[in-house]
Length: 272
Ligand code: MG
Ligand code: MG
Image 1 (cartoon, rainbow, N blue to C red):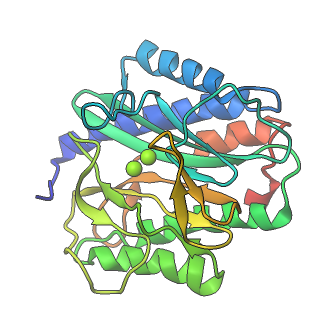
Image 2 (cartoon, rainbow, N blue to C red):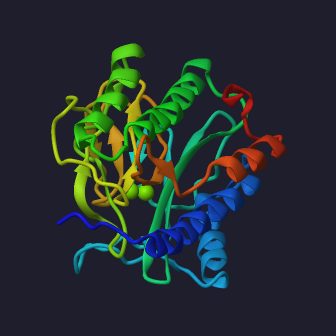
């Protein structure tokens, strides 16, 4: 069942989504070579709870197989669902940070990929294209369109124009009172296919795009997804309000990008 939100509910959900953006902004200001991803997770959990939220991902999942952290942190060839750990980040790493916040009955869900120091130009291009593809998807998240129109917009740009591998096993999703709701929003597909979009649905649009093959593996931790060929992968995500004409992101990259530009340890010139 696909939920249609009231305008009041959407404004509540926007606050959750913007709390995710604020948390990712904190991450952006802390990132540097030598920092551990576990320390970022500790900071993020404290920040979310201090601001009246609950980390959506912590203990998420079926009994006996729950995610143990507040952030999913996926470095280099890790695609999504990476565990924060005590490995120190290095110059040249890319780091995808996915965050969810539950507040006042609604979840926000957003992700951003950062580049630390001197990152290969081809990898920076992957980040730029993946981020742009989120906005192509959002533009297609219009009342009267179908899910496949979002999928096609992302696929056509990332794979059609740029030849990147699109992860198929993991997809975007509805988001609201539950972290994962109907419908699934694949990052590949055909125009006019799938469920019809209605005004005031809220979708997490989240392309997971690989520099090389689309094929993936899962690590023995039961969560972390990696590229099968070891090449880098990027992940950007916005909680998105379906509207007439085009969608509107409820989360925002603007404060994240400002923190990224202000942090000399991060490559950000490729975004401008
Ligand atoms: Mg997410
Ligand atoms: Mg999501």
